[in-house]
Length: 88
Image (cartoon, rainbow, N blue to C red):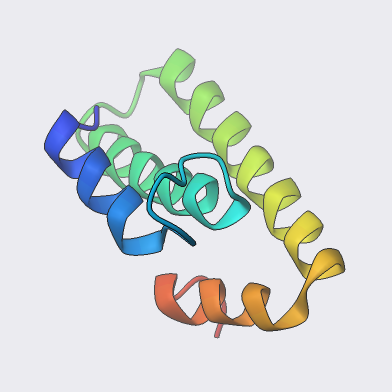
């Protein structure tokens, strides 16, 4: 689970403007942090099927956000992918 400090730090790092909380960049960054933390949880707890389903939903949501951003603005998409290290 993301703490408030981690969440605000992530938002500040990927925000487009000062009061930005809902841009695709911020949403993708937050989902990536949640996915990373849930992945480490699932490595310890192999039989946690409910959390695994939530992880798959978050991955699908991040993928749709990335697809939207790619269609809207290629430069912003490539900047997000590069900063988060999502694709090689």
